[in-house]
Image 1 (cartoon, rainbow, N blue to C red):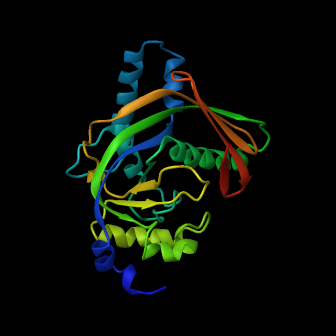
Image 2 (image 1 turned 90 degrees about the horizontal axis):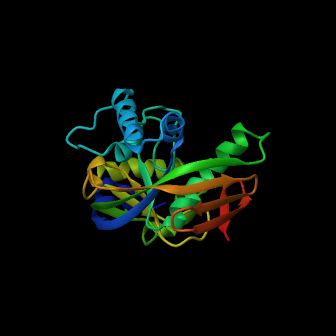
Length: 245
Protein backbone atom coordinates (compact mmCIF):
# COMPACT_ATOMS: atom_id res chain seq x y z
CA UNK A 1 0.00 0.00 0.00
CA UNK A 2 1.10 3.54 -0.69
CA UNK A 3 1.55 5.22 2.66
CA UNK A 4 0.49 8.72 1.56
CA UNK A 5 -3.26 8.11 1.23
CA UNK A 6 -3.48 6.43 4.65
CA UNK A 7 -2.42 9.41 6.76
CA UNK A 8 -5.02 11.49 8.60
CA UNK A 9 -4.00 14.52 6.52
CA UNK A 10 -4.68 12.70 3.24
CA UNK A 11 -7.89 11.13 4.52
CA UNK A 12 -9.09 14.60 5.52
CA UNK A 13 -8.19 16.02 2.10
CA UNK A 14 -10.07 13.20 0.34
CA UNK A 15 -13.20 13.71 2.45
CA UNK A 16 -16.20 15.87 1.56
CA UNK A 17 -19.52 16.95 3.03
CA UNK A 18 -21.86 13.96 3.15
CA UNK A 19 -25.65 14.18 3.32
CA UNK A 20 -27.94 11.15 3.19
CA UNK A 21 -31.10 9.54 4.51
CA UNK A 22 -30.03 6.28 6.12
CA UNK A 23 -31.68 3.05 7.28
CA UNK A 24 -30.74 0.68 10.07
CA UNK A 25 -32.38 -2.43 11.51
CA UNK A 26 -32.10 -3.35 15.15
CA UNK A 27 -33.60 -6.03 17.37
CA UNK A 28 -36.88 -5.34 19.16
CA UNK A 29 -36.49 -8.25 21.61
CA UNK A 30 -36.84 -5.99 24.64
CA UNK A 31 -39.97 -4.35 23.28
CA UNK A 32 -41.57 -7.75 22.63
CA UNK A 33 -40.93 -8.82 26.22
CA UNK A 34 -42.63 -5.68 27.54
CA UNK A 35 -45.57 -6.18 25.17
CA UNK A 36 -46.10 -9.62 26.66
CA UNK A 37 -47.01 -7.81 29.88
CA UNK A 38 -48.78 -4.73 28.52
CA UNK A 39 -50.63 -4.11 25.26
CA UNK A 40 -50.54 -0.33 25.76
CA UNK A 41 -48.05 1.31 23.38
CA UNK A 42 -47.64 4.22 25.79
CA UNK A 43 -46.80 1.85 28.66
CA UNK A 44 -44.27 0.06 26.46
CA UNK A 45 -42.59 3.38 25.58
CA UNK A 46 -42.41 4.46 29.25
CA UNK A 47 -40.89 1.15 30.39
CA UNK A 48 -38.39 1.21 27.51
CA UNK A 49 -37.32 4.73 28.47
CA UNK A 50 -36.83 3.70 32.10
CA UNK A 51 -34.77 0.69 31.12
CA UNK A 52 -32.53 2.76 28.84
CA UNK A 53 -32.10 5.51 31.44
CA UNK A 54 -30.74 3.15 34.10
CA UNK A 55 -28.51 0.85 32.08
CA UNK A 56 -24.75 1.16 32.17
CA UNK A 57 -23.50 3.48 29.44
CA UNK A 58 -20.77 5.96 28.59
CA UNK A 59 -21.35 9.68 28.32
CA UNK A 60 -21.54 11.30 24.88
CA UNK A 61 -20.37 14.85 25.65
CA UNK A 62 -21.90 17.71 23.72
CA UNK A 63 -24.53 15.62 21.92
CA UNK A 64 -28.07 14.89 23.09
CA UNK A 65 -28.77 11.85 20.93
CA UNK A 66 -32.03 9.94 20.73
CA UNK A 67 -31.49 6.68 22.63
CA UNK A 68 -31.86 4.59 19.44
CA UNK A 69 -29.00 6.53 17.83
CA UNK A 70 -26.85 6.59 20.96
CA UNK A 71 -26.86 2.84 21.66
CA UNK A 72 -24.10 1.81 19.19
CA UNK A 73 -21.77 4.51 20.51
CA UNK A 74 -22.18 3.18 24.05
CA UNK A 75 -20.51 -0.14 23.30
CA UNK A 76 -17.29 -0.49 25.29
CA UNK A 77 -16.89 -4.29 25.31
CA UNK A 78 -13.44 -5.15 23.84
CA UNK A 79 -14.93 -8.34 22.44
CA UNK A 80 -17.52 -6.49 20.35
CA UNK A 81 -15.36 -5.71 17.30
CA UNK A 82 -16.72 -4.79 13.88
CA UNK A 83 -15.59 -3.57 10.48
CA UNK A 84 -14.53 -0.11 11.61
CA UNK A 85 -14.24 -0.72 15.36
CA UNK A 86 -11.32 -2.47 17.03
CA UNK A 87 -11.40 -3.78 20.60
CA UNK A 88 -10.76 -0.42 22.24
CA UNK A 89 -12.14 1.96 19.62
CA UNK A 90 -15.27 4.10 20.07
CA UNK A 91 -18.61 2.65 19.00
CA UNK A 92 -19.91 2.86 15.42
CA UNK A 93 -23.47 3.37 14.14
CA UNK A 94 -23.81 1.14 11.06
CA UNK A 95 -26.53 1.98 8.54
CA UNK A 96 -27.09 2.07 4.79
CA UNK A 97 -28.43 4.28 2.02
CA UNK A 98 -31.10 1.74 1.08
CA UNK A 99 -33.48 -0.52 2.99
CA UNK A 100 -32.24 -3.53 0.99
CA UNK A 101 -28.61 -3.05 1.95
CA UNK A 102 -29.47 -2.41 5.60
CA UNK A 103 -31.58 -5.58 5.59
CA UNK A 104 -28.91 -7.77 3.98
CA UNK A 105 -26.26 -6.59 6.45
CA UNK A 106 -28.48 -7.09 9.51
CA UNK A 107 -29.68 -10.50 8.29
CA UNK A 108 -26.13 -11.66 7.65
CA UNK A 109 -25.00 -10.91 11.19
CA UNK A 110 -28.16 -12.49 12.61
CA UNK A 111 -27.49 -15.59 10.50
CA UNK A 112 -23.87 -15.92 11.64
CA UNK A 113 -24.97 -15.58 15.28
CA UNK A 114 -27.79 -18.08 14.67
CA UNK A 115 -25.45 -20.69 13.17
CA UNK A 116 -22.91 -20.18 15.93
CA UNK A 117 -25.19 -20.07 18.97
CA UNK A 118 -28.23 -22.17 17.99
CA UNK A 119 -27.14 -24.87 15.50
CA UNK A 120 -29.93 -27.18 16.71
CA UNK A 121 -32.70 -24.77 15.60
CA UNK A 122 -34.19 -24.94 12.11
CA UNK A 123 -35.18 -21.27 12.03
CA UNK A 124 -34.99 -18.07 14.04
CA UNK A 125 -37.76 -15.46 14.04
CA UNK A 126 -37.11 -11.81 14.85
CA UNK A 127 -39.38 -8.80 15.13
CA UNK A 128 -37.13 -5.88 14.24
CA UNK A 129 -37.21 -2.11 14.22
CA UNK A 130 -36.20 -0.04 11.18
CA UNK A 131 -34.61 3.30 12.03
CA UNK A 132 -34.65 6.06 9.41
CA UNK A 133 -32.57 9.15 10.07
CA UNK A 134 -30.50 11.75 8.23
CA UNK A 135 -26.72 11.97 8.38
CA UNK A 136 -24.91 15.27 7.76
CA UNK A 137 -21.16 15.25 8.34
CA UNK A 138 -17.73 15.14 6.74
CA UNK A 139 -17.58 11.79 4.96
CA UNK A 140 -15.12 9.74 2.95
CA UNK A 141 -16.30 7.35 0.24
CA UNK A 142 -13.86 4.47 -0.13
CA UNK A 143 -15.74 3.06 -3.15
CA UNK A 144 -13.79 5.53 -5.30
CA UNK A 145 -10.09 6.22 -5.97
CA UNK A 146 -7.64 6.30 -4.42
CA UNK A 147 -9.12 3.87 -1.88
CA UNK A 148 -11.01 1.69 -4.36
CA UNK A 149 -7.62 0.49 -5.58
CA UNK A 150 -7.42 -1.46 -2.31
CA UNK A 151 -10.81 -3.18 -2.40
CA UNK A 152 -9.32 -6.54 -1.48
CA UNK A 153 -8.30 -5.20 1.92
CA UNK A 154 -11.09 -2.67 2.50
CA UNK A 155 -13.96 -4.91 1.38
CA UNK A 156 -12.77 -8.16 2.91
CA UNK A 157 -15.81 -10.08 4.18
CA UNK A 158 -13.94 -11.44 7.20
CA UNK A 159 -10.65 -9.61 7.86
CA UNK A 160 -11.40 -6.22 9.45
CA UNK A 161 -7.83 -5.28 10.39
CA UNK A 162 -7.34 -2.73 7.57
CA UNK A 163 -10.76 -1.14 7.96
CA UNK A 164 -10.33 -0.87 11.73
CA UNK A 165 -7.02 0.89 11.13
CA UNK A 166 -8.69 3.13 8.56
CA UNK A 167 -11.47 3.93 11.03
CA UNK A 168 -8.93 5.15 13.57
CA UNK A 169 -7.25 7.32 10.93
CA UNK A 170 -10.60 8.71 9.78
CA UNK A 171 -11.53 9.67 13.35
CA UNK A 172 -8.18 11.43 13.74
CA UNK A 173 -8.92 13.29 10.50
CA UNK A 174 -12.25 14.54 11.87
CA UNK A 175 -14.28 12.37 9.48
CA UNK A 176 -17.77 11.56 10.72
CA UNK A 177 -18.76 8.80 8.27
CA UNK A 178 -17.17 6.21 6.01
CA UNK A 179 -19.18 5.21 2.94
CA UNK A 180 -18.40 1.77 1.53
CA UNK A 181 -19.76 -1.12 -0.54
CA UNK A 182 -21.43 -4.01 1.24
CA UNK A 183 -19.46 -7.26 1.28
CA UNK A 184 -22.66 -9.30 1.75
CA UNK A 185 -24.20 -9.09 -1.72
CA UNK A 186 -25.15 -6.86 -4.64
CA UNK A 187 -27.82 -4.61 -3.15
CA UNK A 188 -28.50 -0.99 -4.13
CA UNK A 189 -27.15 1.71 -1.88
CA UNK A 190 -23.91 2.00 0.04
CA UNK A 191 -23.19 1.04 3.62
CA UNK A 192 -22.41 3.88 6.00
CA UNK A 193 -20.29 3.67 9.15
CA UNK A 194 -21.09 6.70 11.31
CA UNK A 195 -18.02 7.29 13.47
CA UNK A 196 -19.09 10.34 15.48
CA UNK A 197 -22.23 10.99 17.57
CA UNK A 198 -22.49 14.51 16.15
CA UNK A 199 -22.78 13.23 12.56
CA UNK A 200 -26.60 13.18 12.56
CA UNK A 201 -28.47 16.07 10.96
CA UNK A 202 -30.92 16.17 13.86
CA UNK A 203 -29.84 14.10 16.88
CA UNK A 204 -33.42 13.73 18.15
CA UNK A 205 -35.26 13.28 14.84
CA UNK A 206 -35.81 9.81 13.44
CA UNK A 207 -38.55 7.48 12.28
CA UNK A 208 -39.10 4.07 13.87
CA UNK A 209 -40.97 1.35 12.03
CA UNK A 210 -42.00 -1.76 13.99
CA UNK A 211 -43.71 -3.78 11.23
CA UNK A 212 -40.69 -5.67 9.80
CA UNK A 213 -40.27 -9.36 10.58
CA UNK A 214 -37.14 -11.41 9.84
CA UNK A 215 -36.95 -15.19 9.62
CA UNK A 216 -33.47 -16.69 9.39
CA UNK A 217 -32.86 -20.24 8.16
CA UNK A 218 -29.58 -22.08 7.74
CA UNK A 219 -29.08 -20.82 4.19
CA UNK A 220 -31.40 -17.85 3.68
CA UNK A 221 -33.17 -14.91 5.29
CA UNK A 222 -36.79 -13.85 4.65
CA UNK A 223 -38.13 -10.37 5.38
CA UNK A 224 -41.78 -9.28 5.48
CA UNK A 225 -43.40 -5.93 6.28
CA UNK A 226 -46.90 -6.36 7.69
CA UNK A 227 -47.69 -2.68 7.20
CA UNK A 228 -46.71 -2.16 3.56
CA UNK A 229 -46.88 -5.85 2.54
CA UNK A 230 -43.33 -5.69 1.23
CA UNK A 231 -40.92 -8.61 1.26
CA UNK A 232 -37.25 -9.37 0.67
CA UNK A 233 -35.26 -12.57 0.45
CA UNK A 234 -31.52 -13.11 0.74
CA UNK A 235 -29.99 -16.46 -0.12
CA UNK A 236 -26.97 -17.53 1.88
CA UNK A 237 -24.03 -18.39 -0.40
CA UNK A 238 -21.31 -19.00 2.13
CA UNK A 239 -20.12 -17.89 5.52
CA UNK A 240 -19.42 -14.34 4.39
CA UNK A 241 -22.18 -13.24 2.03
CA UNK A 242 -25.69 -13.26 0.63
CA UNK A 243 -27.25 -13.18 -2.80
CA UNK A 244 -30.38 -11.05 -3.06
CA UNK A 245 -33.33 -12.96 -4.52
